[in-house]
Length: 170
Image (cartoon, rainbow, N blue to C red; front, side, top):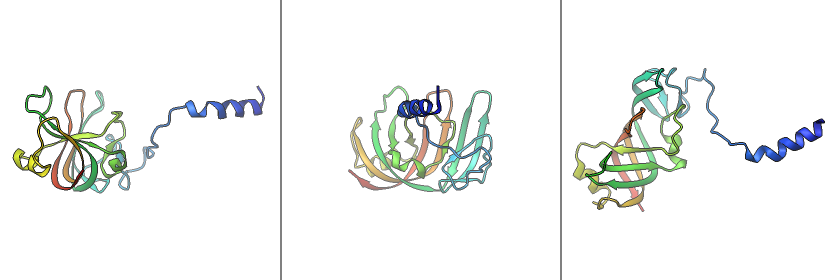
């Protein structure tokens, strides 16, 4: 195969090669990025403007829990999950792709969607902030969150955050 044929073959098949999000190199401490490597992160590091306050990493199982302080303003879709749901209850929030850089993201997280459960202590106030919707209701919102926690475990456990404020409901 000559060089021209090789280039033509690469050009023709390039659209079929899956593209992945570019991640910072392993030696990048990640303080200016939202993506972090758990095996290199240290308490006090800042990702997406949030400070890492605790980190638990099990390299054998790739289980990671990471707690952050700080606030982020994000957009996405909320859903009120009924109390009798098998796994969760309360209000979940799926982050829009444009807002993902506003949150710390574990570099090894391969989940298709970025979502979490609100863990505010006062459930009634949490629901009131979203207009007291009935279970099963979904809607778009812009919210401010804090105390974001990544739970990347091999169990049915969600990431969590506290709702600070609902800026807009759609």
